[in-house]
Length: 137
Image (tube, rainbow, N blue to C red):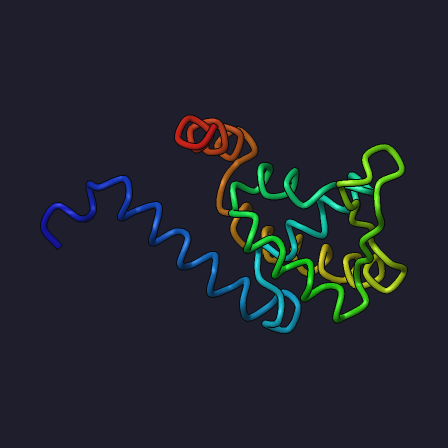
């Protein structure tokens, strides 16, 4: 394996692959991707949030966010409404169907996360998150 086991990027990527494989098998019956789940969480926590704010929070380009929102609109999980404060902006809101789907997805996500977080003590997990946040602000 040469230098690979001692490379940060290699180890982070291997961990991400393990997380991704489990996620795609267990969350949303393989139909939901992490970005879609994250978008729904942000909309739930911030009703009326603008697409640009979601893009900034998730560090994803606006075009990708537009596609994700359209996908959720087709599934009747979100609606877009013109802002009453700024007519140039549209706010995104979860529908009742979206909220119900998100409750199920959240449960599946928590079970997925638990399969990995239980590998660490609470102190180790806090340290791991702190160390990873040094890489991504």
